[in-house]
Image (cartoon, rainbow, N blue to C red; front, side, top):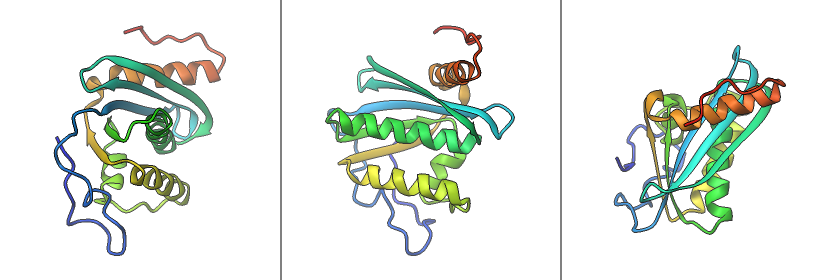
Length: 168
């Protein structure tokens, strides 16, 4: 589902999607991203699975983030996907996240009120602006299982636990 300009964007903010083509380019990456925090806030981590447009997995990213919130972890996953794409010379990225809040904030539908999230939102917007094409969409958790498993494995590792998450 392509991202379209939103008439709900807060006044004075650049809508990130107005300069983007609604049609996906021939070559793009797909990032399945998830973040979580046990206890929220609590031990946090993110997981990102990067695939090419044909569905071939090309990278798996995860990181333990210490004591943070779920939303902080979700943003860190998005930023990791954006950095990966740019660092590897890709200029088109489709992100799939199970965080409706993150997706709606990036699209400009919801305002970002939390100061820490505003900084992460700003960083994400800067990275998105460096791409030629960008799309973000919400998916239910069951459609984002591998990224969820990576996020949980990062939290387990950071907490000194053996990962209990099943391998996919």
